[in-house]
Image (cartoon, rainbow, N blue to C red; front, top):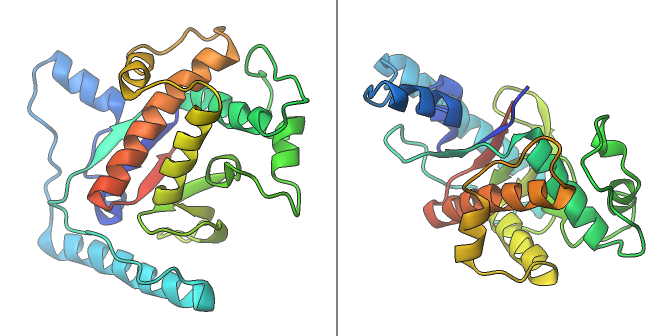
Length: 233
């Protein structure tokens, strides 16, 4: 199963009115125009209202922890952006961050074939009481909202699935901090990293660099356009 990342209105995401990287590439190979889902106006408005109601309920559930108003564009005409770090890339990036904050531990040379969420450094980063510098990356977050807050929390998404929620603003900052703590490269070099997906057996760091390029670009767009960022799998 692949892993895509979507930045855009949640109403558009749940309506299926968007293309992932593979779908867009397939369309472009045959020079077809961008896919535009035929919308029923009443159904589109119903979907949008469902997202707005969810947003209001989510805000109320946070109580005194609410980071101010939860507001962003939910028009179907708002832009959206996608990327595909893949599970191998995203997993490598998560592990890279975990090992950076546990420097006495040696990271694996390649991403483990079994479940990497049981990795010892990642377990330490998620241990109760540990203040991770990369919490919005290592704590199994699936949805980042375009609002500034430092904590992560578990709640229901629009589809009533239990997910961990974070802040795209904090994610963007933590990704920048990760670069400053390790690679120390500029945006031009990061863009080069994102041009080619590494081979399956490539070193962990190469996969982490590729996913870093994808995630940092999308986190930047989420902040710039004030739009949610969501994993899609």
